Length: 185
Image (tube, rainbow, N blue to C red; front, side, top):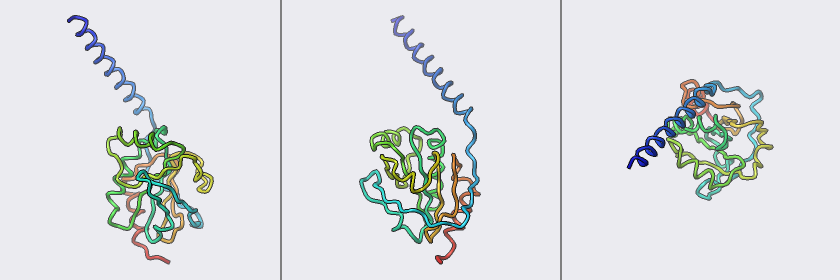
C-alpha cells in the first residue's frame, strides 16, 4: 500500500513539474503580434491546389470573389500552434462576410496533422490543406513558418504576415472585413 501512495505522489509531482516546465516555456515565448504588412503592388496570388483532410481538392482559384486568409504552418512550430485558435476565431467572426480561412500544413503527413488536431483546445472548423512535399513554399515565397497571406476578392495579395499573429485582434478583423466589403474590380 505504501508503494502505491509513493508512486501516486511521484506521479502527481511529475505532472506538476511538467506543467511548470511547459508553462515557463510558454511564458518565455514572445507575444503574438497583430500587425499585417501591406504588399506593394498587390501581385496576383500564385496558384494553390491541395487536398484537405477530407481528401477533397481545394483550389483557391475557385474562391475568387472571396477574401482568403491563407496560413502556412506546421505542428512542430510553436507560433503556428499558438495562433491556430485565433485563426478559428477569425474564421467564426468572418464566415458570413465572404471570407475563407485556409491553413496549409507544410511537410507533414496527414496522420501527424490529424493527431495534432486532437490535442489542441479548439480544433479548426476551417479547411486544413496538406502539402506533405512542401511544394507550395517556393511558389508562395514562404521564408519561414508561420507565414500568412490575405488575398483580396480579385485574387491579389493585399497583406502578408511572417511570424505568429493574433488573428482575432480587432485590427486584423477590421482589415479583413474591409477587404470583404470592397467590390470586385
